[in-house]
Each structure stands twice: as C-alpha cells, then as structure tokens.
Image (cartoon, rainbow, N blue to C red; front, side):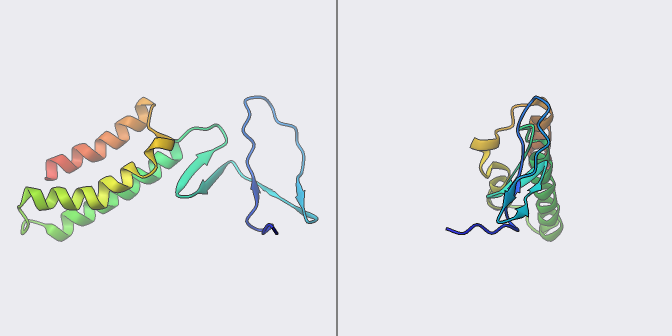
Amino acid sequence: MKFNVKKCKIMRRTKKQPFILSFFLDDTVLEEVKEFKNLGITADNHLKWNSHTDKVVARANKMLGLIKKKTGKGLDDPKTLRTIFCSLVRSNLEYRSVVWSPYTKRNIKKIEGVQRRATKFI
C-alpha cells in the first residue's frame, strides 16, 4: 500500500516537551500540525475539543439563522419547525458526539446556547 505523502501529517500528543525531530516518508519531510480534521472531527494536540465545538456551534448557528430567515412568520406549526430543527441543526450538533462529548463548562454552555436559541424560535 502506498501512502500519499502530501496527505500525511504528524501531530504530537504529549504533555512533556517533545523532541524536535523530523519524520520522513519517501524522502519527504512530513508536515507537523497542531490541529487536524479527520472524519469530520477536529482534534488538537492537547486532546481538547474547543476548536471542534466552536466550528460545530458556528455551523449550527448559521443553519438556525437560515431557517429563521426562510421560514419567517409564514410557518407557525411547531411540529414542522421542530422537525426542521432536528434534521438540520441538532443532527450537526450531535454528529460523533460519542467521541468529542462536551464535558467542559465552556463547551456545554456553547451547545446549550444554540439549543436555547432554537427553543425561543420554535
């Protein structure tokens, strides 16, 4: 199996000061990154999910704003609005939450903010 050198990256996960080494694959130095997105989940080198939560919340807020703008005052059926919210917004908030489950107060507060904003609308 051949690796695509352009897609290979290194992310060090350590609490100690890492050794400064270069890693090579097919005589090419691999790029070192502090944050990497894989299968829709952004992980950083400290195993914190703050950047992932920020991206998920921003996407959910954008989608919720779009729903508000497009439905406007013409759609007053709470069941329909709830279905739209669950399918477009909540599904993004819960995507792979088993892996990045929000456990810090900061991340919980951000996600609950989106849900609170949606309940005022619905």
